[in-house]
Image (tube, rainbow, N blue to C red; front, top):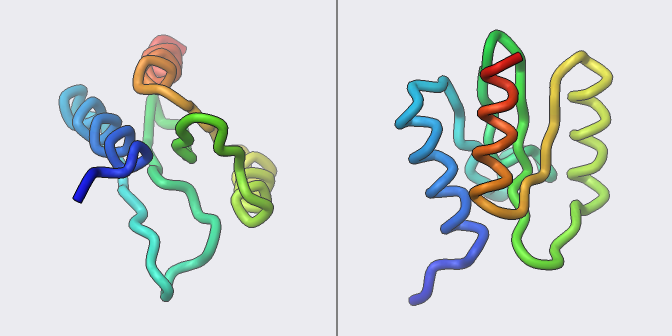
Length: 97
């Protein structure tokens, strides 16, 4: 069975975070955990950062947008990178800040 593009992006993003020693949580989706939660949570330079990883023409769903607003309202950061390079650039920029 082929690996879904979103899963591949998520796996590569996790490998990158591990290689940089960045604390992170991978929030696997299942029927029992809240709908729309971000794919990854990380602590970068003391900041709470959420990532909703997307591939191709996928946009955030309404329940994901609700989580984004709640995170940002609480002072956290929320990003939706579409490629591994975009993800890495975001992480590196946050590390420099």
